[in-house]
Image (tube, rainbow, N blue to C red; front, side, top):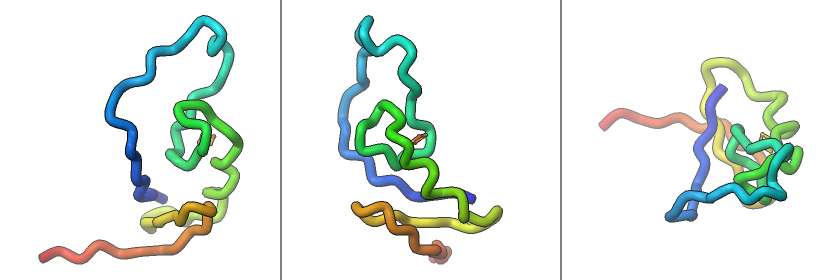
Length: 68
Ligand code: FES
């Protein structure tokens, strides 16, 4: 299971003291990035060896990437 994430941020996020204890998003789907907002639950049906693309509403589509 893998997914393509379109990220538009162009600079790093410097954590603030009040961020301590918050979980960082590692799935790429959070709308509160860099923090987890629970969106990772959407990836539970992803299958090993498949590639997924998510739309802005969090709907998954299985995709393939063709070699040129
Ligand atoms: S790890 Fe990405 S939303 Fe939780």
